[in-house]
Image (cartoon, rainbow, N blue to C red; front, side, top):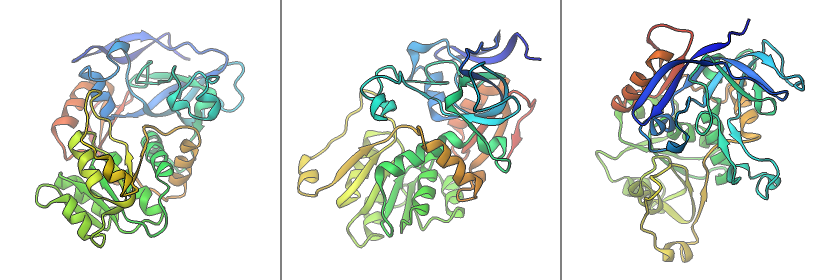
Length: 353
């Protein structure tokens, strides 16, 4: 029996989250209602909390990295059924504009995301269009299922980069996504794969996942070190996964002539970087942007998890109750040794992973 109301964490205004009793989402004939098992905390959630991102969408139930069980389907839905274990592609476009018709949903003028622009999964229930819902294989846990979204983002960036066998890859940023980028690069046959970071525990976790080199910004020049590790040239491919002007300039400086830089980290909207067109023209460098996983990136992520090509469990840090979302957001920002934190409406105390 589906209740009429549910518990949800609502960002009322910047810096204020309230646990409220709100109506359970009502689904239309093409939608699915999902009982949330886990929802991962993302840096975007913190940005929403402090008013840096999607401020015009408040009040909002955030949360976009989720898994759960289907508890209701619309009358036109045939692709999933009640009881299925699922996750859902959060990216919504209009479906008919110039960009959507060319498979570029992420640039649709009406682009929206569950948990970022419309209500998401830091709640007991969330709804999603059936065509966006993906079943989880039996050997993929709900925790891992809630990690499909960030993996899809890393996959989307990897496809944009088009890394070739034996190419060197450097990733700036030792957060969850930065480490995921290194794992995808390994699957693409890159060598060496280099992570540039500054948090010791995170870099230790990354090393345990089989990286070739870790460069600590605190103790050495990252540009010099990356060049030393790549025959003095710089990396063939560089991924910026931090989101500051300084790290973007650093990423460009360590990209070899003829190399490619992937812009992934989200900066403040008003931020700029110093760029010499000379370096791109005579150096024949290129840059690609990538912001989210969409379309086939989601089933590709699930397939990699199903067959063990990626094991994200070493990146899991905590599980916390829904009521403690605000505390967990602040803890994740303060304690940089933590990586992925999951929120669940079904648990009552903090659990280490």
